[in-house]
Image 1 (cartoon, rainbow, N blue to C red):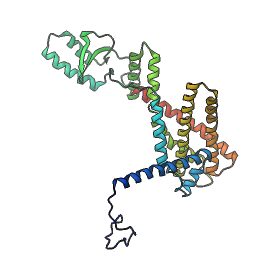
Image 2: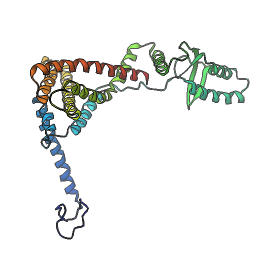
Image 3: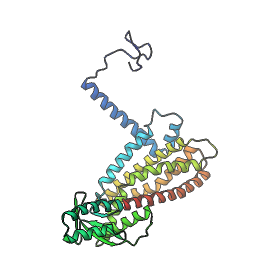
Image 4: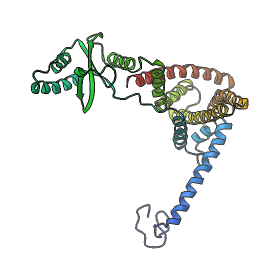
Length: 337
């Protein structure tokens, strides 16, 4: 029995479960699988209908405890976000910005390479190229670069971590104690310049692509900030828990994913057919998006049009600042890593 009680008759005296064999046939498993799919679809489309055309209703009913009719917000968020990013990335070019064809060695890596060259120097005491490389590695005033491309001079050839590189040493123009962030920025800048010095357009496209592939993290991390701003704006009057603001935020993000999917679809259709009708659909969606948020805030929090409009403006201003900061952080992360 599910409750763990010992049953002596046909039905459990504790939970009323019928005492029958729990083994299911393949046909029974198939029926359960089909039922779960259509049950999920039924709830999903029912929730989606109210979410699109009744702003704030689904979130309001959820926090009131009327949850059977609608799909759970977490499940719906995971499903819609997965579909959105699957389609989004399928339309985006693949990115391999973080390759190992250029390395700017730190202190530990320099010592690791120096130990390998020291062993080679002992075996080949007359090899001046190895001695010069070792001297450059031990010179703290030099920056050491390893590249798989560029000026491939045999005297600069080294093997590092199972891969062949060409070593280049140049004067270190950074401050001695520049700090971790400055070192990382300098490393990223040098790597970018070396790889794309002949084609900055290709470098910009690669950098932008690397940022796009971190958009899921940006959406995920920005959600609790969005809920926090709502909690700050609606802290007076009716008492709402942070979880209530989070529920409203999750449903708004779900709505945003749906709108973005529609925008991608209409934009693709417009590019394919050149029909102006699709551009009108795109414009209508872009207008409806903020209107839906405004009406959702009014219906969910039960405030008047005036107060809702003020909070709507403040939410957009503060949200833009937060998103701007997160954007910069993720852009730098895409550039440095």
